[in-house]
Length: 101
Image 1 (cartoon, helix red, strand yellow):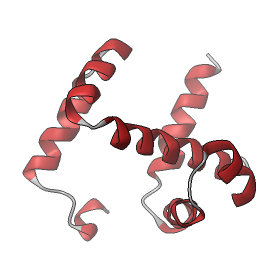
Image 2 (spheres, helix red, strand yellow):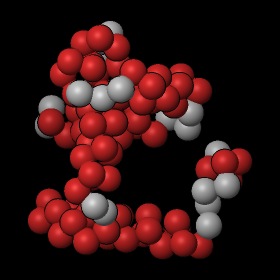
Image 3 (tube, helix red, strand yellow):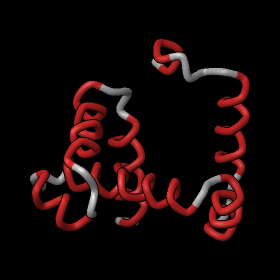
């Protein structure tokens, strides 16, 4: 499905190989600190939190109050959950499964 949206390029392949090469939380912090601005990182973390909350059945109002994210962004995340590639569900499911181990 990524090819349909034009995100599959040699550069994104290299980025994703880099992410897959991270082995520890310290690796993640070091890599993403170098790769992203603080705002970019905070925005991505907010989106993941909002996606988890949507999947748990929280309302937009609850998410706005808890995550301090715009309803427009929540709407975009919701569209991704409803019609996207399934990335949020896949990753959040794996995180939940590991937490339950």
